[in-house]
Picture 1 (spheres, rainbow, N blue to C red):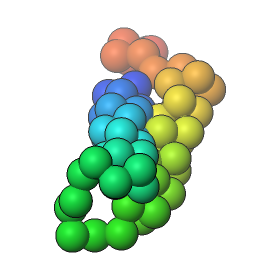
Picture 2: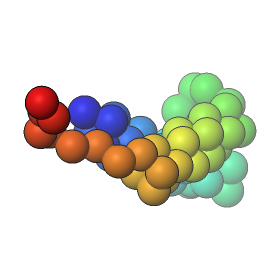
Picture 3: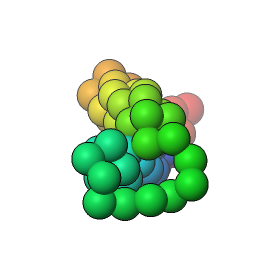
Length: 63
């Protein structure tokens, strides 16, 4: 379950980073500050990487 959340955070962060960078350099207008997309993208991207890197997630139950 933790790995699934990590993958979702990683993908969302990558998408937000792309939108933010495109907005900063002027080729995309979203109506929201592109810096907000970039900062949130960095937060989600690095937290997703951290979840995937440091959490051991198993779907088996130990008895």
